[in-house]
Image (cartoon, rainbow, N blue to C red; front, side):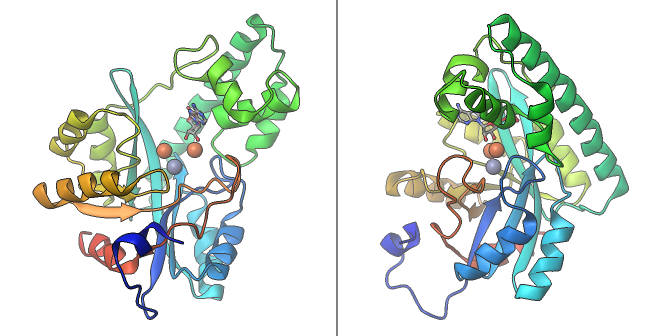
Length: 284
Ligand code: AMP
Ligand code: FE
Ligand code: FE
Ligand code: ZN
């Protein structure tokens, strides 16, 4: 049952739905872009947002599969940026993913991610966890290597009992083996997204538990909010929709599917009416 069913009753059967936040193996998701598209079709979705951390490499393969399956692909990227202690994620929808300059920019970020991963593995060794770096890189494969892959190896090698424990004990914020990324400021990330014709949207706006900061980020150029998420209740949705109206923003939503990395696959569990996708498209 989608969250929508509780707020927009009754559901019209001719409505089309989308999921605008899905990760693939090109970052820390477990599904290939092709598998995402096939799952989307099985779930009755009409469109999916391919949203990888610091990578646009999953978009082309998703588009190819989308053509076969009749699924619309919304190209996007999820960029990390830092504001004080916060690691803020901004999604750039409809970013010019074919731009050579943009691809080079992300390739540079991938190099920095590898260096940071090595540093975290060294810090883990000092904590008594001899994490196998080759295995971390193998798990990342073509994807943006990061803490999710390290967490998986910590589980595999028995240093922690489960994925979340890896974050509590070792690699979460303020933990002994945590190394921050060399992040842009939100203003810089928004500028890059805009330069490449993307629409900057604040991902999981309530994760930061700082509602004043959402307004600050809107002042910095955020054009929309991720309103519909599986971890948002009706109060959260109402709060965000109010903000959307007051600040004249776009509203999007998705499952933030990582293909089961965090337990369930999630895709299909939340369906956003395509009317919101249309508004997003019209903002290009
Ligand atoms: P990185 O980009 O390497 O810093 O990794 C960030 C990713 O790790 C996020 O997008 C989440 O998928 C995951 N993550 C971060 N913090 C946690 C946490 N406390 N528990 C579980 N997963 C987390
Ligand atoms: Fe992630
Ligand atoms: Fe995120
Ligand atoms: Zn995400």
